[in-house]
Length: 212
Length: 371
Image (cartoon, rainbow over all chains, first blue to last red; front, top):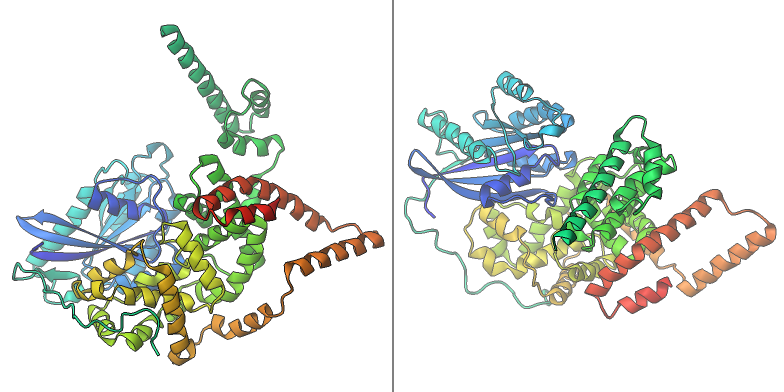
């Protein structure tokens, strides 16, 4: 499908905070109470409209465990937006934000828009991190902030779309060099026709076995 | 009818009330043990296994958190609890198996401080748990971790794993340079195969039969065989890849979704011949992998094994000798036997069910061995 711009996002944050569930809610409008964990990097996409323009969001969902950090890091590069997620019912996931932020700032381009997300806002009775604390952290570090619930879908659309709006504004202001794909922004194909396939008829040695 | 309904409602509310009382007793500080004892004695007892799991330890004054003292405990717990897909469907059976899985992983990690837990390790361990039961799984997983997964996956970081993935592209180049170049142009990298490799495909295949078939293959092969198999999958999907858009997202997305109807036997044969034609040494220009250097010694040791009948006789002889010397069996061993008996009886139903569902022809053998 034709789009005016493509924005590349990355979702980061501690393991089990609901990164994959946020993505699933945004792309498929559904919630899985028990979501299998993400190993390495997974991927989702959705089209949105901003200012009458079709924008394709290409979202990379990363594994939260520390040992995968060296792998997921390479996906920061070339991202225009990042959702940094913590779980409002687990204080430690909030305490780790500084590390995540340092990591993101160090490995991404300086204009990347970062949205701080306190997820699981439906679990009010188990809340360990006050909303004000999230707001304060965001203010201090120049991030946008929102509390979301991947379960009830509350604020999920807004989180993804507001990030896109911020990126879009930066483009209008000329902050982003849109001709440099390393910024995580791509201008849509000029022609409606999608790339013709490169499928060659000959196709390597297909038959099973015998490579010698 | 009205009477029947009210009776039913009364029945439900009675149970609900009891559960609520138990919940409150568990959460009061100190724990209201008298209420718990009364609940256990009175009609219906503790009602569900879920409640029993919480109350039984309290009745015996066991602090379950003493058992949870490991740096990776929370991570393991989190991962095992959310990988429901890998377990048989019955809820109580699954809960017992999940507890066993957590135990196995922590047991191996405690005894091998050089090994670091990674997300996906549990996908490997669960396969062994479902096939051989808890006791044998611990021994097997320990060996596998030290020889196959070793430090290359079980490092604090995944840097060495990236090394192993580096074998993938040269392999593709050897067989289909056009495909190789296409993937290079797309800048897709090799991370799409990460979960295949570090879980031996357990995380990505939905049919347990296929997982078992691959474990047969990998257990009998070189540790890098999982990479060769990844190469073979990509080669098998060569047309699809080449006709997708030549960019990272499209190719990554396409390849990371493994088709569930792969021709496994054919692919296994192909992976094996690929391995023979292009052995790791030929590809290992720079990657010096710890696993690989120790694997030869491991393989040598596998050639010195005795058949089960001999091994069993040896155990009996040792036991007799000890009895005649009058030495008491060590306490640890005794406990292990008890734990194993419990573990086995608890696993048996589910494991047998899981296997019976997936590998009918093989189940009777498995059951005979256990009884």
